[in-house]
Length: 516
Image 1 (cartoon, rainbow, N blue to C red):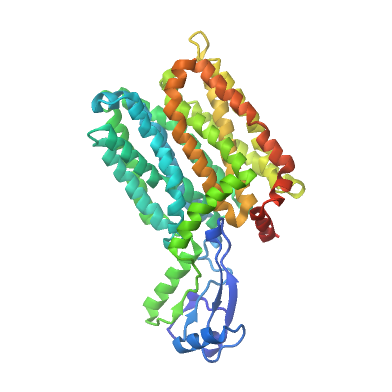
Image 2: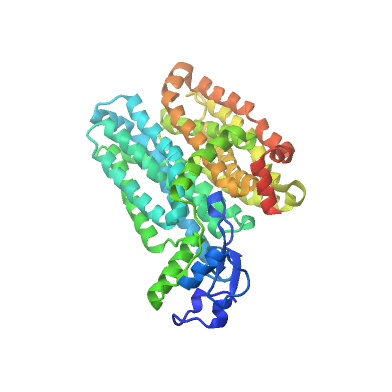
């Protein structure tokens, strides 16, 4: 029988238990670094069953090592957590996404007082808006490896601490250069809330149950982008608060979140959980023979893979390239709206309504997926993204041709709502479809699209004001609408020809083999 660490009563193990051999693996997770298959064995000179090589067997006999693994139904396996606990973890992880995205779009509402206090230009202040998503896109390609080495909970905690401290640096900055540096570093810390959440959800939810948790992740990201300008705008309009208090208020929430992570967020990486259990066993029993056999590449190797494989998938995989281009454009336009929306009217709460509509649509998408998966396969994930392909240009055209003082403001709200609705659907569709397409390589595929998406989110705001001044709101947003029209075929091509395209990819073929 397999050795169950939960029933250990003494440092001694019976000969029958010592002779047992377990072969198993912890439930596979999303991402190539999150799928460790390993054997768990208890060996001594009486061992029977699966044998090691002569050299390894002699080493184990000499050291009398007792290898420990989970029982299949062990409640401490993250995938076996109670449903209530899974949702609590998902909720906390979603808050990380919320405060990360909130900081991205709250910053620019303080431009007026910031430019006055720091004696800088509007373009210099805009650079601070742009470098935040740059940190989002670049840094996770390195930090993803650390979550495999040290676990997710420590990364959440220390990232939240660094994220909060950067508010201090920005609010006390004597010049705009310090603000820009602080924003980039803050974006790097905030990237945990954008990239780690998908892995956390994959740790605890099976593929069939990930739809709603991923929808919570998406609404946390998109909803906060619309909510933060509203709240930051009120702060900026108060002459006693202005841009510094936009930072201080967010810092308070960030500190509260750090304490929330410290005391309530549970580790979800199964290999890390197993290592902690074995460490506690050795401490309680005084027996150092208990070990967790977890085969992990060296940290340098993990970082190399994290940095190179996403780029390889981004430039060689048509599915990743096309979806990255699509969501990257949506993200770039979204940041343009974030910067320019106060130029049309100061406060616009309606952008959050699109996120709510997107969340409700995701519930319907889950029903469609379960219904059509037997006949359409994973392309059933693309049913609502095909609708979103029409929503994006429609929303931009309405927004563009309603930006006149003679046109009722409700049309502006409708245009923004429709665009945000479509962006939410695309955002969620990218994550779920790429995860299904690339299986064990999904984290690299998602890292590639995240890099492309955030680079475009970095670049677009740099020319937003110049573009709107030269082309006016009407024609600049009309241009965005026509570009959205050019990208309209992307989900339809993947829906009808996706299986054929994926069969030309060795990465997708391996993912298919893993599923079957």
